[in-house]
Structures are given as structure tokens and as C-alpha cells.
Image (tube, rainbow, N blue to C red; front, top):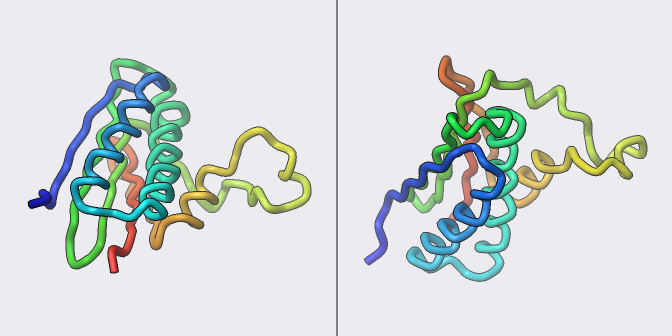
Length: 137
């Protein structure tokens, strides 16, 4: 029987993204997600974790990124928790605007919004929680 809570902590090193991908594959298989939802989840969680490592924690290996996964009320809720100072998501340029189409970065938040059913942020005194929600039914 699958668990209803999964947890991972990694140092803020971009090389640890592979560990996050393995973690997502593990719990996704454990709870029986179909391949389409697994692909969406992998993209969103790795984008959020990359943002936490690079932008929030500045790749400082002394800072952690935590990934908390909970299944509640037919929803999969994933919190990616960093130790950064936070940001205002409304300040992120729209990657679909002509002036942004050829930029090498800036699509992560957009992709999380497209592939998840909900995307929220909770800025705290100790960092930012990126909260991804995927409906299971």
C-alpha cells in the first residue's frame, strides 16, 4: 500500500537534480500515477527544485532544499522548500511575449503553471515554499 507522505532533503548543488528525478519516479510509481502525470510532475518538480537551488540558495551547498510530498483529498501536494529570500512571481517576465521568446531561461514558472493544477508560493522568514498541486482524479 502506498504511503501518504514522502520527504527528501538535498544540498543546493545542481548535480542533485538527478536525485530529485529518482525520488519523483519512486513516489509516482508507488502511488500509481500514469506516464502522462509522471512526465508533468517530473518537469514541474525539477523546475521548482532547480529554481530553489540556483536562484534562491545560490548553489550554496550549506543550504538545503527540502521536497515534501503529501497525498490529501485526491490531491498530490508537493512543497519545494528553499532557504532563500523569496521573490515576487508577478515580476517574472512572460516567456510567451515576443521579446522573451529567444531567451535561454525564464520558462520554469510558466511550465509549472501549465503542467500542474495549482501553483502557489509561501514566503516565510526561513525561505520560500513552492507548492505544486496535481489532482489525482
